[in-house]
Length: 65
Image 1 (cartoon, one colour):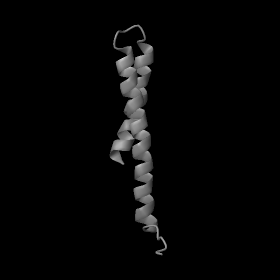
Image 2 (tube, one colour; image 1 turned 90 degrees about the vertical axis):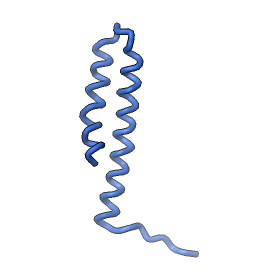
Image 3 (cartoon, rainbow, N blue to C red; image 1 turned 180 degrees about the vertical axis):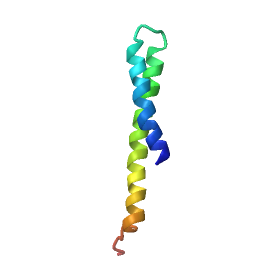
């Protein structure tokens, strides 16, 4: 959960800085790093929500054949 919160603040800043400096030679590298951190934040967000729901509601029961 902590990683998710940190990435939610850092990744938009990196993407913003990349678009702010479009004439810089490292523009594409910084933009790709920002986008990959944004995608990682989304994945960690879903993972954290799943862990919280399993902790609050218990594991999902499945029928055995």
